[in-house]
Image (cartoon, rainbow, N blue to C red; front, side, top):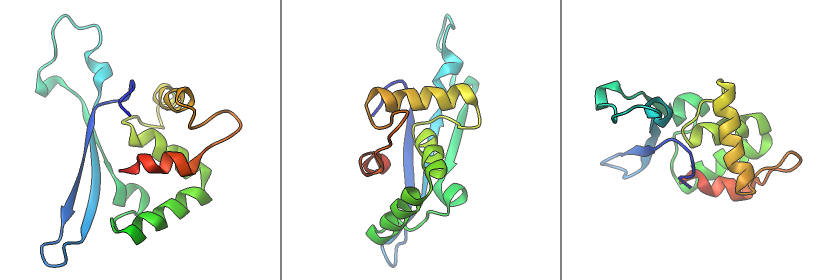
Length: 127
């Protein structure tokens, strides 16, 4: 998606015996902390944060069944879905300006509007 969102990576673990994936985490870099500076900040000066899907949402089963269960959980809870949508692109919903910036991105690409959400579409952004 990469449209005014914070840069990030997704990481997970694979169990060597079962080959089952788990432990999905996203790590983001706060790009706003570098705006307006004459020089790019060093790595040590950058702000990073992590979204641990298990800690935040109880989502740790990265099998097809696990993704489906998480999808059903999102469909049943609009507030949870909005929280996930904001965090998924590197923003923090508890910070109003970041929440608004994230939702503006989704409105711009027509995944949400003031009256309608499209969970089947934005769930595809999961991976």
